[in-house]
Amino acid sequence: MTAAPHSLVRVDLPGRAYDIEIGPGLLGHAGARIAPLMRNRRVAVVTDSTVAALHLDRLRAGLAAAGLSMEALELPPGEATKGWPQFSRTVEWLLAEKVERNDVVIAFGGGVIGDLVGFAASVLRRGVRFVQIPTTLLAQVDSSVGGKTGINAPQGKNLIGAFHQPALVLADTALLSTLPRRDLLAGYGEVVKYGLLGDADFFDWLEVNGPALAGGDQAALIHAVTRSCQMKAEIVMRDETEQGDRALLNLGHTFCHALEAATGYSDRLLHGEGVAIGCALAFETSARLGLSSQEEPGRVRAHLHAMGMRKDLSDIPGDLPDAGALLALMAQDKKVLDGKLRFVLARGIGAAFLTSEVPRAVVMDVLTQALARRS
Ligand code: NAD
Ligand code: GLY
Image 1 (cartoon, rainbow, N blue to C red):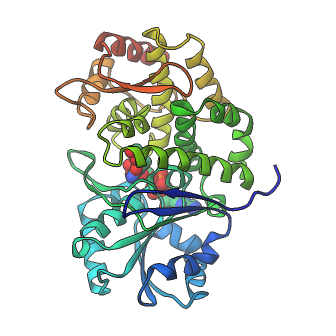
Image 2: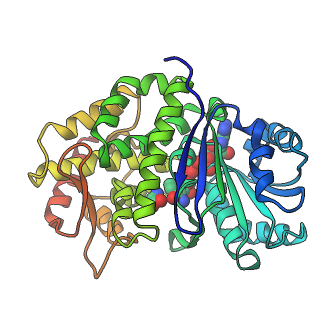
């Protein structure tokens, strides 16, 4: 593909509108983009040590080019950071840095840093603005957009948090070149989700261009990040706090959350890998219920396979609990309402919908057969 220009998606929420800028090299222009949001010349950056070692100097230079100086806090990388201890450390550091109501905090990292720093910004002095500079594919297409922020509790993932929209998102697609392939493909699980939930043409496009994207083709990355952000922005503008449509973004997540819990939120299964497997299982459930054609689950799995991704329970190493135990874990999902499991199912690729009318026996059956494929 030929080089494409940077692109821009606007999240037009009343009183809280912001831009998502997408393209390679944006880090070098971070100061020029962020300075207009600021009264003083100093920003507080929170990142993780892996991202800091690879990219913090370039962020510092990008800010300095517009006369901004920065102080940085480096947290340990990994999901375990998204809990109370590193959260309080972050809030205390921001207070020690004398971050005030008119200041801007930068979240520079993947979804872990974006979620934690966004939540810290939401409570600091009852709310300061923050800028997302996402550095993983997952964060660029999903977690940096839409204002869901938070941390994990011992009782479960993302149980403590707030809606707090960023003031700006800078998705520098060149940063993805240092991402380990496994993390890139996990993020691609969220990209596939957008095609499956609402844009069949985009899924067609991914079937053709996915391999180039995973190989680092910038034009393909820009297109995929842009289309994903457009779709997320449209849904968030309709339903910011998930009273309805926003739940469509959880395609695959009811299965995914149970699998993440069953694997102890460990690196046996990354979130985006669980989403991809969950999407395949959601399409299988849809086909079982006669909602979509019998061929579609196979088409979803074929694309995941062609991308070298995990696509079924047989791709998860180690033991898994039985179908009944997985179903019990699903019942703890945040989407359970009045004791009824809510699923995102599909009438076909690009045609997802939310339903509480899924017989438990059908889900048991899908899980039992998927577990049987492991042996
Ligand atoms: P992550 O933040 O843990 O990043 C994955 C790994 O990649 C980390 O080890 C990190 O140090 C490293 N890394 C980051 N950028 C890099 C780069 N450019 N080069 C090399 N290494 C780099 O994980 P993630 O997959 O980005 O995000 C997962 C988190 O996002 C989960 O906690 C999930 O719950 C959350 N999430 C939130 C939302 C939301 O709407 N807020 C949506 C989806 C997922
Ligand atoms: N990742 C789901 C959402 O933002 O609603």
